[in-house]
Amino acid sequence: MIIGVPKEIKTREYRVGLVPAGVKAFTGAGHKVFIERGAGEGAGIADEEYVKAGGKLLKKADDIWQRAEMIIKVKEPIEPEYARIQNGQIIYTYFHLAAVPELAKVLVEKKVAAVAYETIQPDDGSLPLLKPMSEVAGKMSIQVGASSLEKAHGGKGILLGGVPGVKPARVAIIGGGVVGTCAAKVAVGMGAQVTILDISVNQLTYLDDIFQGKVTTLYSDTYNIANAVREADLVVGGVLIPGAKAPKLVSKELIGEMTKGSVVVDVAVDQGGCIETCKPTTHDNPTYEVSGVIHYCVANMPGAVPRTSTFALTNTTRPYGRKIADLGIVEAVKQDKALARGLNTYGGHVTYEAVARDLGYDYVNILDAVSGKAPKAGAAKVTRLRAAK
Ligand SMILES: NC(=O)c1ccc[n+]([C@@H]2O[C@H](COP(=O)([O-])OP(=O)(O)OC[C@H]3O[C@@H](n4cnc5c(N)ncnc54)[C@H](O)[C@@H]3O)[C@@H](O)[C@H]2O)c1
Image 1: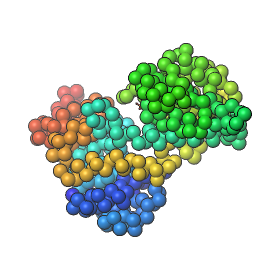
Image 2 (image 1 turned 90 degrees about the vertical axis):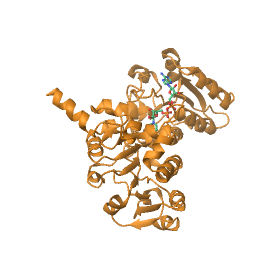
Image 3 (image 1 turned 180 degrees about the horizontal axis):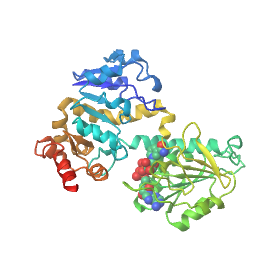
Image 4 (image 1 turned 30 degrees about the vertical axis):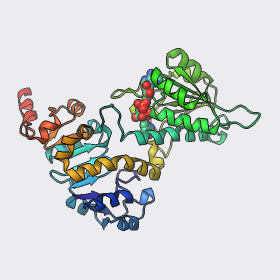
């Protein structure tokens, strides 16, 4: 298969869809890889490294898009890229399509096979291509929290781990999933006093086992949350209810009860945030203050460490990418249910139920779509629109 890796053009996106090791894996299996010149620059990967790995550099993004059967990216195509998308092309990237109806329209019209990283899902319900970014954000949450606690950054002026003879900081982590576990690892490592709250008793049991008494686990209810937040110097929000907005677990009033110069890092801000006073910020201006409490609410935290994020992401995307390249999209989807769940559009149909529902398309099962059993592309929607008139 011919694979194309364009440079990301979304503002401040420095990651890249494939690293040299990935290029080597694809070319070693007989595929051809075209890389746009400078595509890896933001992640600290030089063009020559791609060439050494067997990739071929092309100067213009247009050439990459025109020649590739499969485009491997990081972010969803943005407006200037729409015209570059080829009919019937495979695009393998994060899409979050429900939020971009205009892109969904282009993908349907051009009969693109859109394989979304965020919906690739094995039978156990996990989302393996989202996990590495949660790991990065979880670890970063303590780093940025510790820095915000410094006086010069508006914090109360305490060192997270303390020193002998002086108390360490108290960290409350709400949500003990991937973000919460990674945050706890760093906080414990720095010597903080850590409490993790979750509604999953199984997860609390797991955390209690792996941290062997180095963290306090608490069932997450309003009473325990209020006590933990009031006492904390740093609160990390890492809850997730799949497919839903994050529940507001820390009220404005509770923020007002924290001591001045405390810090909250709401990692769940990309799902609306679990702290009432949270609003999305950017890396350019990451913090603001409410009731004397410093808030860090950056919605794309991994963007701050594009090199780590690129390698972490591509470690998990590469095996599925190889499957698509080796078997072709139809056979790959038939053989791998997790990958099948990743396909959001195919052959002019929307093949992911939640996206179809949110954007008003008729949903077509992916196995029907790839087996040619689906109605003619677009017909169902047209009929429905006529009926609606
Ligand atoms: N800001 C960023 O840059 C960034 C990066 C990565 C992930 N995230 C976000 O971080 C959040 C957490 O992601 P994750 O991968 O850790 O999810 P996860 O599913 O691994 O963990 C979420 C945890 O929240 C727990 N939970 C649910 N309701 C709760 C409640 N009421 N009280 C306490 N815990 C509760 C769940 O039991 C689960 O253990 C998500 O919203 C994700 O989108 C943000």
